[in-house]
Image 1 (spheres, rainbow, N blue to C red):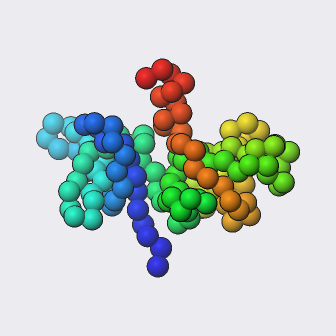
Image 2 (cartoon, rainbow, N blue to C red):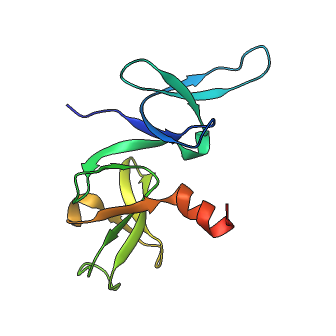
Length: 130
């Protein structure tokens, strides 16, 4: 059975957490919240822009791959690039990779031995100097 798992960056301290996703409806103050709850039941508010779903695959280091992760495959024979660097997205009903250099898309099952090198949210923070 496939794990339905989400990851997000907490609003309080910027820590990445994994668990079940709950979207809290607006309360009397108009607050809408995205919460990720751990297995133990502890729920934390997360930045909705950072929420990504586990795609059901792991990289070559056995790390779970989530939507928004940046992955790298060295010496790709499938494309015109020497090294393939792309971001994990959900498109056309499936998780795919989008090249950060050429903009083309690929299916994960067709490209073995890739590794997670970061995620798009951390990459944006570094580029913006945050």
